[in-house]
Amino acid sequence: MNVSMYTSWDTTCGIADYSCQFKAALEKTGVAVRIVPVGKKKGLFDLIRNGKMMNNADVALIQHQFPFFAHSFLIRSFVHCVFFLRQIKIPKVLTMHEVVPLGDQLGRFSFLRLYQTIFASVDLITVHTEKHREIVLEMGIQADKVMLMPHPIPEVTPPLDAKQHYKTLLGLEGKQVLTVFGFFNSRKGYELVLDAIQDLDDCVFLIAGGPFPGDKSGYAERLINTIKEMNLEQRVKILGYLPESQIPAVMGATDIVLAPFRDMPGSGSLSLGVAYGKAIIGSDIEQMKELQTRGIGAELFQIDKRGDLREKIVALTGDARRQAELEQLSKSYADTYSYSNTAVRLEKRCAALILKS
Image (cartoon, rainbow, N blue to C red; front, side, top):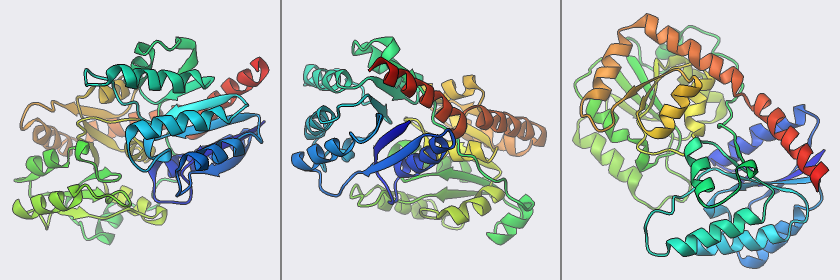
């Protein structure tokens, strides 16, 4: 089987990392993957040209993120995506990394029609969370056209040395190391962690990420200022975007991965913590509850209860047995939902689409 994949590529981007790992996993199953990279130019004719390039394959895999189809304006992204999809004459699989709920906002009907037009143009829609699956189904899409595909977990080599070695390497001896991975985003809840650790002198908070390339929101600057105002510069370390070679050391030094998210799509940053078999403390939002039900090694705190995150941190850092239990759950989850296993599932669905076409 040959597939073409439209995705960001060779750039600092979570979906580019996702696609690179998925490409490798699909190739292990015998699938040949040809990348059609998201270009810098995203005019209508650029998208039409890219769409035509997808046809030299048996199946087209499209990674959907609104900026992949237009530099600005949500409506323009929808329209460009529709024209892009219309150029593709082979079975199409659309991966929605995030689905924006329609809500009750002005223009709800227009957004619904645009979503429905996109979904009608493809043969299979994959989503990473049950919440996103429900949103798509509420738009009137048939259930057999929507595949729930939990965000795959990378297959990594565990750190070779003891945790203390990596803590010493990073200058964190004697500290409880709490880590959040991934690009800066206001919905990741960093401020909840700052509040929780303010009087926990034995805890160090690693923000293992940086701003999105080209980010002009000013959120990074506001977060840095908040850290300074709270006098936490010595206990909060912003590491920036980590090259792959540095990740094992940071994960090796980490005691607990935090996921204090206010909202989340299928989180690639959290999947990295699971891959390394870490105990997790996450917020009690719907998506985290879903992951916990699926078997991820997480304790949940009440996001609307001030102080609950602090209590969970104190309890888990002081309970080695519970940490070990959660770590084992994360390792088992990583095996079940690995990129390799997920690629096998998707390959079977793609084969069925080819037979049907």
